[in-house]
Amino acid sequence: MIKRCEWSGTDKLYCDYHDKEWGVPVHDDQVLFEFLILEGAQAGLSWRTILKKRENYLEAFDNFDYKKVAIYDEKKVEELLQNSGIVRNRLKVNSAIKNAKALLKIIEEYGTFDKYIWNYVDNKPIQNAWKSLKEIPAKTDLSEQISKDLKKRGFNFVGPTIIYAFMQAVGMVNDHTIDCFRYKELKE
Image (cartoon, rainbow, N blue to C red; front, side, top):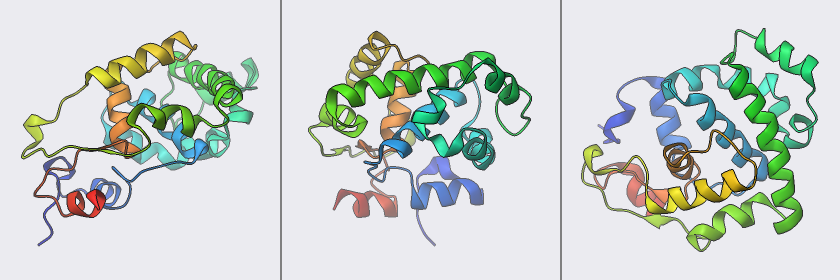
């Protein structure tokens, strides 16, 4: 029997995400943008809800091509708000567009979003050593710092809790519990 992080439970969708993606370092700007948008869309909802809608999001948001998303117009916003396959929240849809524009400015300044975001952890994942789910924080001083800077740069739906979840998802922190089979794999 494989020992996983407690949060993954027995749900196949969660287990697959936990086993193959969560905590794996991501350095592709398009995938980083995807997680930033999905984590923001998750605000107030369960991650399971977002995972179930992920394929729809990929299709609706042009595979998270931030160059395309940045030029979405009001017509596209209305089209997205009619799409039952995504979270139909005007603030969250508009946020994706706003964040794509802000991301392009960061790329202009840093060359890639990857360089900007991974610089916060000196380009290597923070290796935590949590014994239980209860120990894992919802946010940290670092996620607050990143959140503040992103907001200053024009991003929204990037509060410190959302940013910490993003950091966990894209492998900036290894928050698998030490008894989880993925902990050691990702530590190495």
